[in-house]
Length: 182
Image 1 (spheres, rainbow, N blue to C red):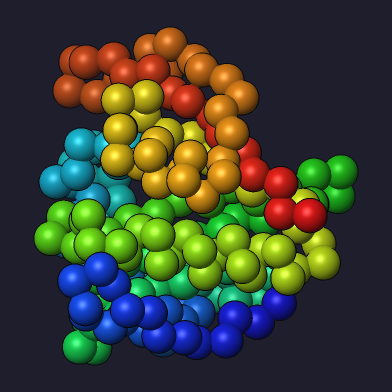
Image 2: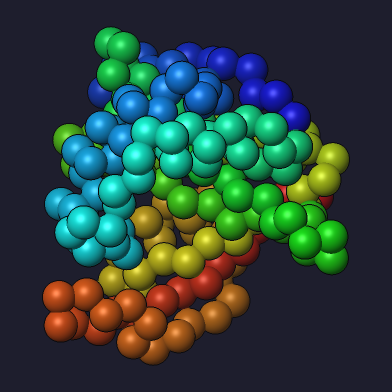
């Protein structure tokens, strides 16, 4: 299902463009992710783990573009990517009505309403998608800002796994949450 590009005004008055990623954005996506992925405390990757080739990233993005129950949105400001969300619809027939999602943004774009704008757009798209019924996610239990956002958007906690993430010699619990979109 297609996503119609839209503008969103953030709490600080800046206006961003939310749009579906294109395969031709692959190098920009790689550059964007490298700009925050290793600096963020709550991204479950260690240095060097995100290292796709251009061809690999193009294939990944093509997969999102082609699948009817998947979405990869980018948020742009002044022509630069500042945030993203990917909704990854399950391809197994018995779970095709479900999708897991992940979000990312540069640190300087946190706490200005960008996360809310991106997530609202993705939820709206999922509600309009006839295939999807449930969105779910995994989040670090100590990611208070992320948990507050997800709760604000209606996500419900349904489980916790102690010591799920092991990062830099420190354990973090994982909280699983879901949202019914039908």
